[in-house]
Length: 75
Image (cartoon, rainbow, N blue to C red; front, side, top):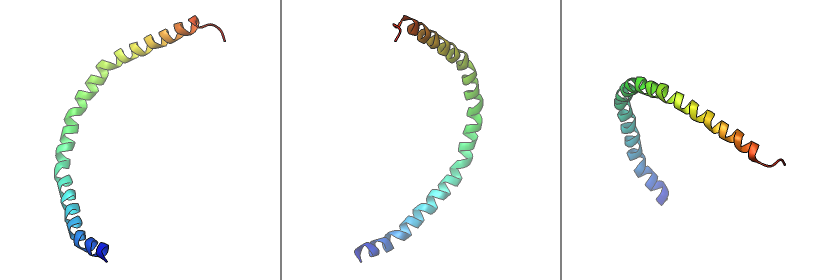
């Protein structure tokens, strides 16, 4: 009975919180979309600049792995 009474008391509060959370999300969504729209060119540019470096590092590590394998005794 105590649990049921507590649930009955909390239910309207939960509905209010859910309603406010939905309203807040709807208000913030245009700002988030606008920010994403402005950030996309910046992240694309950064990725284009970093890609050659990551490719070079990947080749370097592959060479190190290959050379390490040649130094290991045969199994």
